[in-house]
Length: 261
Image: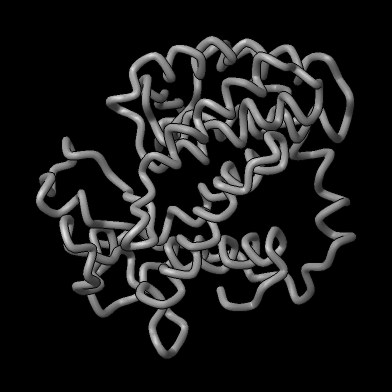
């Protein structure tokens, strides 16, 4: 016998004021969890109401840090700032082993070190984020015009991954746009813009749905085909990836002002 599931009705109207009204509840919940989580980085909650925590190179390792910085931005409470700062060494250590770094550097450092620099002016965090941007831009294929997603240690193998880009990467280009702003070098922004244009051309279908990933020839950089790794099928639309596309292309537009993406 299957367990019945009760679905909550979707609010008839979700406007800005409703979101603002609920923010104190969200902030209070985050504050309550600070002591429980400590210096660790939560990855996912389990059905037993326990946290699973990130390892050294987890792509979601900055998400909790980002929430703490957002709470600090809204409240100016030192508790949030101090807890976010506790994680600085984690991200410093990550940069010491670049072999494991991949396209998720944008997730990892925009929500941690970039946020720290923007809110507190921390120069060390700024330099860490620029180093992360340098690692990310080295994944850019100039001929193909895209950022390689995964390393050759990925289960798919180097013959596939060295020519593969994925829709998630649009969430990582903000780190490159930011690096251009703080360094005065257009190289970062040019790579981010070209990457967005390439994905708009190859990973977005005619009906504006998206492939999860797109393969290029790892040597010639010729486009090959779109396919999925986490979605249902190659010709389906992976919901989370589609949300990355909506937000990522909008973000590119905010930075560039161009509609080609």
